[in-house]
Image (cartoon, rainbow, N blue to C red):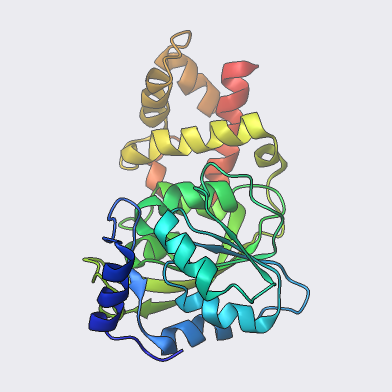
Length: 285
């Protein structure tokens, strides 16, 4: 694979009748050095199964198939899928799947390598990583999201994705990537991130109903990270349409825990997990 310039890439897209879809996050990687960086950082073992999400024109796929590992590659665009099927017809280690990964059953895998569609990064994280026995990940994502994942103690970047991601995964390394290595050129800066599953995921999060509650809880309180705990929880309960409890009940609950009524942004990730467990017990008994 050589670097493809924008004109060559646009010509292929025109021949395929593909107009890059912003909703699908279609930004195609041009730079071979970035592809090789992704492969190098992946440190893929011989027996590891690879999941690729959104291969596009196959820039990463072209190098991955050389490793001889089993690869499952999900491409939602039917025209790109057919292009890839023709391009990699002789690569028996590659299984192309023309499905929406958010709706599909994903085969077992050990590592995710992907230039993730930026518009659905959050839902992909939830589907692929927020579970027991998560895979490793070597991912190109929006740089602002990378900063939120890696900066757990900075008010500006402390957010919903900071808490939810770090409850299940451990960020390892981050490299910034120029947006001018893609076509169409995205308006955002990008980053290559390496992540691995946490060694000890709280058992509360491994039960589906409780995990879904935790993710709702985080989504419900983080918009109010500048409010104190009681007020944020009160707003969450209203959002959940849980009307059986008064604000005084929440005060009493917090008083009986080890937590103080401080601002949400002052809590650690693991403390928010513990809080979600207390609130879950408070609601459901």
